[in-house]
Length: 437
Ligand code: JHZ
Image (cartoon, rainbow, N blue to C red):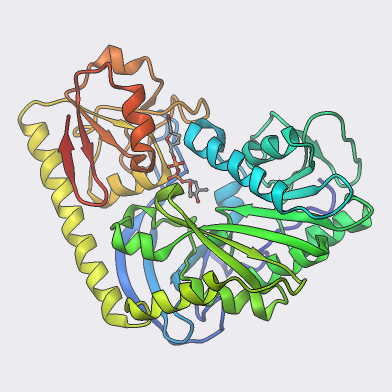
């Protein structure tokens, strides 16, 4: 595409190896402090969504370490992988989960009820993936637009910024979100004759290195009274529910509410309300706007909660790291003993976190026969590092496993419902390793 923008064009250049795949983090991405202290080291692991073909079992590995900013308390990885490597060919499809679809439907209904204008409301969704959320807005009569960098999502109409074609399909600008993308969209007049009433960003902010650039882009496209709705996995859930498998290279930041509040305020988008949802193991939903809406008590409550529960104290982080190491060992011991006892274990849900977990626990296809995933783009491939085949649902019947390891434990109910006809027992790895019928 003409004028393609890379959000991170300046990667270190090594004369022998060429452009590096990643760069090191030297200061906090929110407050620029260099008081960064490491509290978790998960070793060197491959990129969780870089699934491999059976003909090429090699996966490159990268360090996975988490640092805490001693000033604003943002947890962040020690390196940033070039996003073009991570997201240009992206196998994840939001719509595979009915639970997530329902969550999106509810969000669309809530925003419709918040809309106070007289026209039909408009929404722009950043990192719209397979339009799971936009379809719900479309059903409610919103004017919809997506922005999505993946090039392997073919079910939507892509907008080439030089040739704008919009038909009855959901239009999507096929780019990374950035200030430049937002400005180019204005130049090409890809916006209603007013700013967007809503901009949504689910599960994307944690993936972004230059969060300032990201928010500047939002400000260019949002109406003066518009509302920016952001969902991020919450660090408090990660810690209290021991969800260490959600730590992988795509997730650059692990958010508390406090650093987010400071970031948004600094960028002229104060957060006026915060809510907690169970989705993806526990997420915060933030409502922010350049318009001075009345600040809901939830904002102060969230800050007080984090303070009184020790999240600004390094000791809390060290204790979490100890729990992580114990959990990794417990899972390895269980899976090895099942293997030694001749039991057949299959995984369900080749989620990014599940793939990470298997690598942390040093598992491979001896211990896990295969993993069922209903995402066609993942089937026929192998998990990076552990080289376990990803197969379609019919393999449950063919293999008839003794145990099912729920790698997408965040959808436990849905996965159990779909497999209740099998005789297998369930292994639920998170928060505490559990085996049940
Ligand atoms: P799931 C994703 O992580 C991607 P992942 C991303 N990195 C992010 O930020 C987080 O979410 C929040 C499959 N499945 O959603 C589909 C079935 O096959 O937990 C998925 O491959 N059948 C952007 O990848 C996987 O499981 C089903 O019935 O960890 C679930 O992945 C269901 C419910 C799921 O996210």
